[in-house]
Length: 127
Image (cartoon, rainbow, N blue to C red; front, side, top):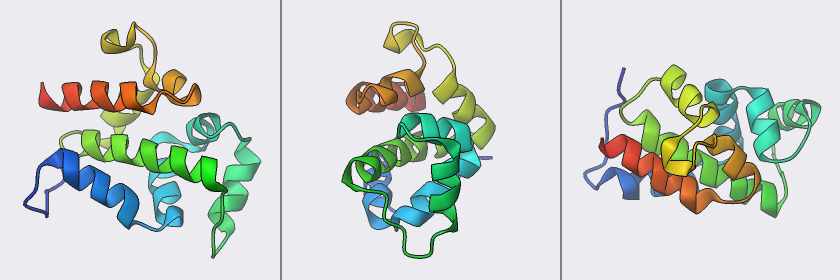
């Protein structure tokens, strides 16, 4: 089921706004619900226990690098979730992607190539 776009600006801008406007704890909870703890742990180069510990914290502090990666990933999630279910979004993150040289988006995120993944997400969302 598609999410309703509550803002009047294009998806590209609203996804970015939501990625920076949400508390990092909310970003983390959304991503772990949609992608799973293991995928999120891989993206931020941490183990699952660290992600579980973060989820249990009230005033979450994950460090600047992890926060940047989580917010980038959340922006990509928001672009895709605008029109697709969490199941489809998870499959998109984990599956081979022809726009990324038949590599999984999650692989590129682990390598710090969020811009390429954002471009592929926009292309997929616009198709």
